[in-house]
Length: 68
Image 1 (cartoon, one colour):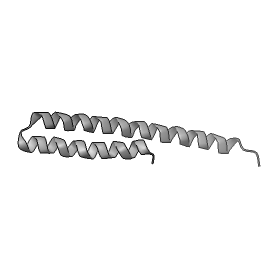
Image 2 (image 1 turned 180 degrees about the horizontal axis):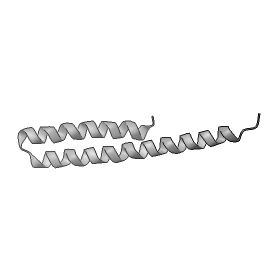
Image 3 (image 1 turned 90 degrees about the vertical axis):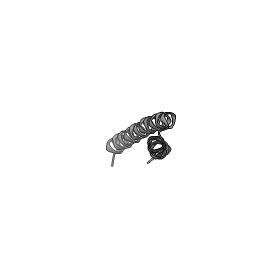
Image 4 (image 1 turned 45 degrees about the horizontal axis):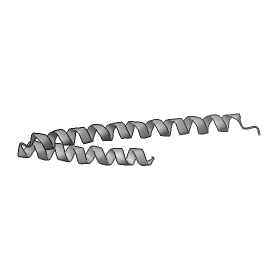
């Protein structure tokens, strides 16, 4: 797991909390801010997963091409 995935997960959780607080208090601005932060977190998490997948593919192809 890389830093992008950790930050993404944190942004998703904080965004969800903000959205729920906004919903409970009737504050539409906080709801929108929370939803935007959640989306940012999801994108960050997806980017981190992509980076991990590329690293895994690069590492896997390198190990397959090594000679005994």
